[in-house]
Length: 183
Image 1 (cartoon, helix red, strand yellow):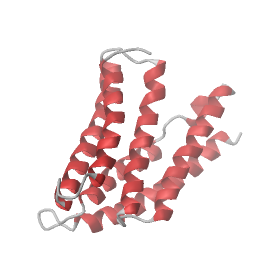
Image 2: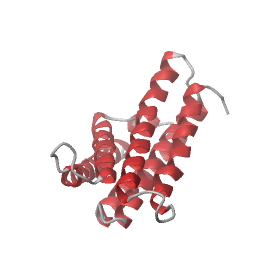
Image 3: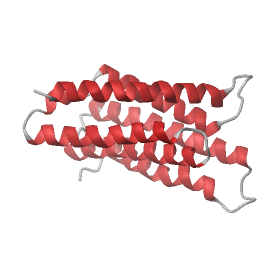
C-alpha cells in the first residue's frame, strides 16, 4: 500500500461513512433531527469533494498508484450505498431507485474486473454518461440528507427529482458499459 496524500484522503472518505450513518443513530437528545440532517449533509459533501481532490492531487503530484486506483472507487461506492440505505430507512428515497443504483455499481464493478482480467479494461473506461450519473447522485444525495427547505427552495423535492434522474442515468450508463463490453 502506498501512503501518500491522495490515498490518505481516500481513507478519510471511508472513515466519513460511519459518521454519515452514525449521526442518525445517536442517542435521543444528542442532536435534533435538523442537526442530524445538517451534520450528515456536511460530512457527505466534504467527503464527495475529497473524492475529486484526491484524484486531482494524485495526478498533480504524480502520486497515482494501483492501490489508490482500487480503493478510490470502492470508497465512492460504499459512501453512496451507505447514504442511500439511510435515505431509504428515513423514507426520503425509493427502495427501487436505491436497488438500481447499488445494483448497477456492483454489476459494473464486476464487469470492469472481468474485462481487466481478459485485458480489455479500456473498453469499459469511465465515460461521460458515467460522470454525469455520478454528478447527479452526488448532488441529489446531500439534498435528500438535508431534507429541509433552504432559502425558499424545497431541497427535498429537488433531491427526489434529481435522484430519479440519477437512476435513469444509472441504467443508461449500465447499458452503455454492457454494450461496450459485449464484443
